[in-house]
Length: 157
Image 1: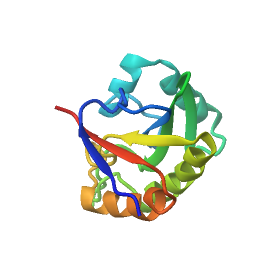
Image 2: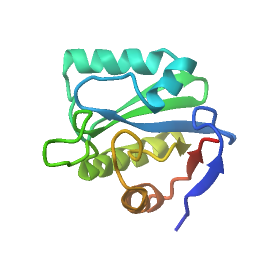
Image 3: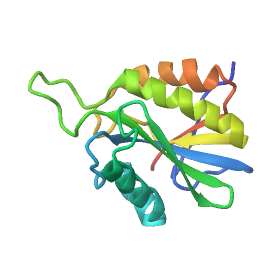
């Protein structure tokens, strides 16, 4: 089975040849304005615009769904709804929803196969969403790596 390849650098600027998909977590309430999405928006407007339109028309806009947006000739951004709201609930449960992340990554594995693309991401779900990387890593293994996807995780310096 493949392994996650860790890279120091910027996940919005993937360092490999060929087709690439940048994957990141979005929330289920249409909010875009903090965290990694700002790095995406500073490079391309279209992923945010498409996400907002998706939220507005409400079609299939729910946890576990993904949206693939082409931003350059061989580069796509995958908006993945894996976060419920934006703050921990009254019981202290963080916004991350691991089951939703797993569904998203299963769908992403199919897309990567269709596009013959490698997958690039920051440590998804571990910033504002409050997730634990050990959990996310296991989900990546059983979805993307199991389907032979090449996965690069970026730690921003």
